[in-house]
Amino acid sequence: MSGHDDHPDVILCAGGPMLLRGDHVIEDADGTQHRTVRPISAVCRCGKSASQPWCDGTHKLIPKQRRP
Amino acid sequence: MLTPKGRGTLSETAFQAMRSSSPVWRDVLRTLPDDDDDLHITLWALHELHYRGFEDVDDALEWQPELIELRRSLEHSFEQTLRDRAPETWPDDPDFAETFFTFVADHDGPSLAGHVQRDADHEQVLELLRMRSIYHLKESDPTAWVVPRLPVRAKAALMELQFDEYGCGDPNRLHAALFARGMDECGLRPEYGAYIDDVPLEVLEENNAMSLFGLNRRLRGASLGHLAAFEVTSSIPSRRIAQGLTRLGLPAAMVEYYTEHVEADAVHEQLAVRTICGSLLDDEPQLRDDMFFGAFTCLDLEDRFARRMLEAWAA
Image 1 (cartoon, one colour):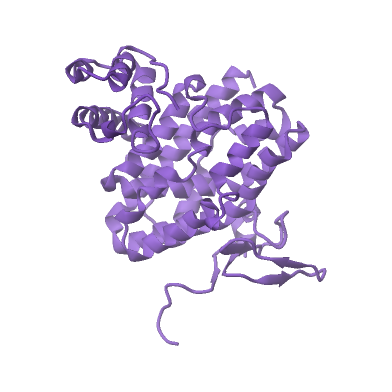
Image 2: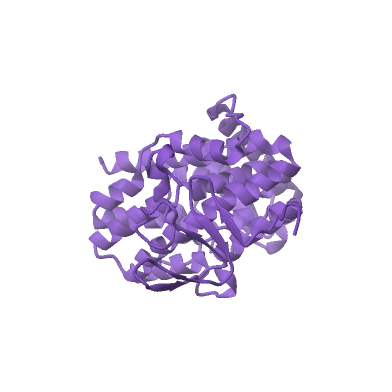
């Protein structure tokens, strides 16, 4: 595929989470599996979310240079 | 829902005419609001004619020319007030998403969520829920007006967010229905608009701003900027409120409403800023200032409401 796709399946948000479109099962570092429950989900990339593996907005509380 | 109680000469005259079988519209148009409370309860009721209406008002009055004329006049006055409160210039960095997140983060205001999390008592929380019910029981509805007014990409993006707000087709997951269930379990009235007579001016202003932006196509940028600021300031406060409700032993259904918003709005804030506002600006860059105006209005009106409540509670 060439060119720009306006509707990617995965979006990496600068300084924030990874957005995932569609139905997925994510296995975390402990081996626990989590199924997505909404049409588009935000996966934590900063490691600080209290709702792992999902984003809870906590990346906004850490200094910009330490965000993903 | 029945028409609210009047709060002054204009609202009393207008609501009486709306309920009458032989209204004298001339008297309504000749009347000026006594004060902001009178103006805003009138405007709230005029907007409500476009949502679900009142049991004691004929549905046909939604498009009664005199009521539209009155609505336009009150909206004009309110919009002027909002623009007077706003800064004259907005950030103009080319990276919209980064600039928008920073704009919201740099806005410093009093926090109701922090008070609920740590200090609020049971009665204060129930009072807050009654105030919030005016919006949460029609959650996302003001933004729905904007959908047909958007170009393709922003329209698809807004519907991706709204679909989640409206429960993805499941009435049990619709956010307004989650809030209603929580109200019921708290022993509060879950019916739409039940507490309108109890809310202060600041709540009316918050609700009227959303309807003003949603119902006027020229203000679509302000509506979506408001949405984006609302979503960006939701996840972390929702968690703090959920913790406060748990601390006070409030019913699980109300805790779940706020818990749901922690993860949902962590998604929605990214969608609202990037795929909704961002794509709309690619197509209609002239809307940028109004997006910031809408965002500022969201933050400023919430500050006013928070100050009002924290002062009343001497917190």
